[in-house]
Amino acid sequence: MRVFFQGAFYFYKQIISLLAASANHFLPLFDKNSGSQRKHWHNNWHRLPPSWVNPLLILMWLIVGISLRLTNLTAKPPWTDEFATLVFSLGNTFLSVPLDRAIAPDILLQPLQLNPAASIGDVIHNLATQDSHPPLYFVLAYLWMKLFPSDGGLVSLFAARLLPAIIGAASIPCVYVLGRVAFRSRLVGHLTAAMMAVSPYGVFLAQEARHYTLAILWVIGSLTCLVIATRHIQNRTPLPIWVALFWIGINALGIATHYFFTLTLCTEVVVLIFLACLQLQTSSKFSLLFSPPWRRIYAVAVGTCVAGLIWIPTLLENENRGALTEWIRGSRVGLDWLSPIFQALGTLIAMISLLPVESSQALVVIPSGVVMLTFFIWAVPILLRGIKIQLQQPESRMMIQVLTGVVISAIAIFFIFTYFLGIDLTRGARYNFVYFPAIVVLLGASLAVCWYPPQMETEQGKNGITSIGKWGINGKKAVMLIWLMGFFSAVTVICNLGYQKYYRPDLFVQLIQQTSPTPVLIATTHKTYVHTGEMMGVAREIKRANSLQNPLFLLAHQDRDPNASTIALENTLKQLPRPFDLWLVNFHAPVAETVKTCVTSDTQSLPTVDGYEYELYHCQ
Image (cartoon, rainbow, N blue to C red; front, side, top):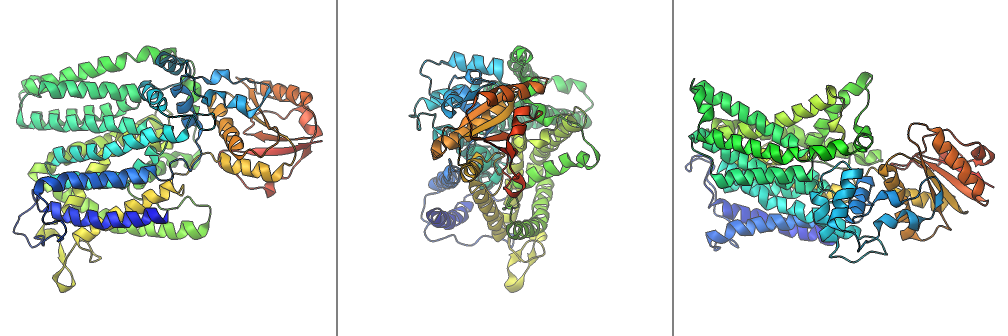
């Protein structure tokens, strides 16, 4: 980590000097003769040809982004959703794991073994019958993981997480394109890319073996097409055919990657309706809605609908869809009705800043919370002022409205699902990928105003230095501080101090090692492959530690009758030789009679472990 920070500090100095140099070639947002006229840039960069500065700066954002995303890539243990990615991407299935009997760790981990006989058809079939996601990312992961050898007989976690990390880094130059196209400003593009590189939310998604970074790429592409379409609507010119076809293709790929990509499409529909209303206000001719630009947009809508409809039979035939989404359903009582609001707000905040407020130590949580609160008290007025000034500029007003419409529409849709349909989408921070790129571009547009603030919006500090806000910090320093906060927030994530893993099987296995000198049986109730994944995490850590004596696992299946798990546990205990320790982990069923013959351990003195509620019995 020391080498990492030294390298990061060096890159930070180079980036700032290069950004100042490249800014000389950007089209200014405001009057060139204003009092905020820029000074001569760093001597190391002023001799660079103008054509070199732009790609070099993009490359540096990319280096920063990929470095953050690859640091500690395998330090955190995989969790249930990642196990689903690993198993299905190999063309394997969870159905091969025996239920209702004691099994060894190697049998439980068998679906994580490379399967040379599996094909892409197996990947697609298993997903369609056992999972609730479309297959595009899993097929790519299937092809990708064939390039890497196994790790101790199991699929390589590094390989599985490397793919989304690389795709996540690819979103940095892509979001630069979105920012530049939207505001016709390389400065906005670079600041957008800079914030994407260090966004703690972006780093969090990129370090998981899941499909969200690929979905973000499609969101960026679709929003870019929306921006282009907006300009053609403004100018009343036909949307180029290649843009329309590209837009349909991107939308089709987005739906084939994650069904929630359709939420992004819904926000685009809302924005297009808004644009149509604006046009009708300026002209009462309803025929405008059938003019060439709109006809092409209708064609895009039809093509996208066709691309989405082909997945409906797969969704309807999947019998596991309801069971796999139970965790985001449920009733609310009292203050629980306010939880979605705070969950949505927390995700928005963590897209920019996230210090170790999830730590279990108050001495870490309190200072981190104070720093974050102070930062937002200072930064939010600056960012809002930047958006306000962009709204006052004729060239950028419409794009601010479009991107803001995407964000507001997405949040509104989340709350509609949560409060009216009983599906709390705010519980899954990762689902906010549907509007995350729009937030980053709005941030970049606001920071561009901070970088070159207009004279009327600044205050003269001491020694005549131009500053923004009330704390005497000039625009460029404000941008640097906000970027640095993002950088340290990304470090918080890669150190597992923010966006912490839901499950900590590594800590649970350490607890078993310290507590149980005899053989152990780890039993859990089983409904879906989610519960298999919970035990896979434990089995994987046991295999890595290689210190427990003949551990066994029991997945006691239950459908609607909890007693089915009780009976499976009873039968298993009768067959095992004693002594052994019984660990009931996330066991949601009545305790078997045979268990009552064992000595109950006082688990109140033992530490809690995220994702694993347990009871310990010593069976002599």
